[in-house]
Length: 383
Ligand code: GLY
Ligand code: GLY
Image (cartoon, rainbow, N blue to C red; front, side, top):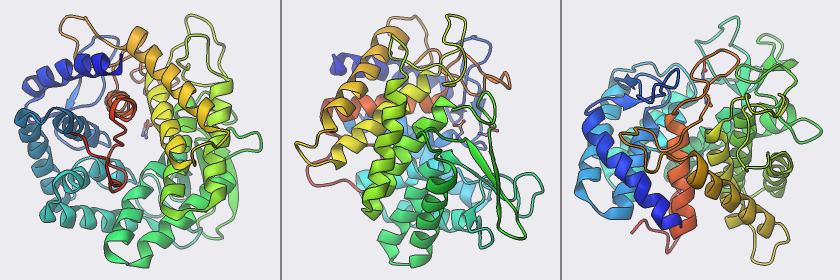
């Protein structure tokens, strides 16, 4: 079943190479089933690159590699010209493009570009309050002291740079950001805030809040999913048991609140009724993250079974009822992703990160191959 779902996905990715040419898919809008394209200037372009690398590794077909290499060239240019890199999503952008190229082919030039990208990310470190600033320029009155849970997925770029160079600045920033996220973004019941504010002059914590969730105290499902996967990856690099426990607890919270069909709505605190929007991308991210946690647990660990079966249930539901299989001219792999429902931005649409994590989860299930967040272990190869 996973192999068939991968074949269905590859059919779409392959058609998209011609459709997108040198541009990058972001989201569809108003259910029009047409990807809005960007010239590599948003936070999302790495996902298309990552989809192409996953597709190339699975098939060995040079069409995917050629398209992936075009994206790598575009990412090199983006870094040289510093095109809209004033945000923390440099981790998403460069992990799945130039770092993926390094992981797949050990290309030295891509390794060097990725290290430069890590340096740009590190420029967002603010000594007071001791955070990696998520959005906006330094000292920005609204965003200057703000962290967001999504950032956990950007930290593997810093960990990787530490591994490659031995320069402890990368690791220290990633470790401190992880610790402050765990302390302030994770709430007592294992739910998460999307964002948290700190005072830029004193470093004091101020309050939790949301940007894409339903309200400040609610739990945005995609934020919870970023937390699941992000803390698992933090554990992979730092091996502190508390981090793995946090990832597991966040996963438990997610699984305990799954709707009947296994695919979450956009926020855990909105009414679970038919008209409420889903976020298929949150399901895909959480599934990939739970498979990562399971991978990190020893054989026989009591939590492995429920993590794997929940991930399988979610991916099967996506493949069966949310994927675009059989739809003529579909451009996305998954229907019913939501970017920001409350803000009315692509609330029931294709979202490119959902497509990426869906294929990543399928590759994990079918071949045990992770994405491009860390160096491959022995025996993990896409072929
Ligand atoms: N990281 C941005 C989002 O999840 O929408
Ligand atoms: N992920 C950034 C935004 O939605 O504004």
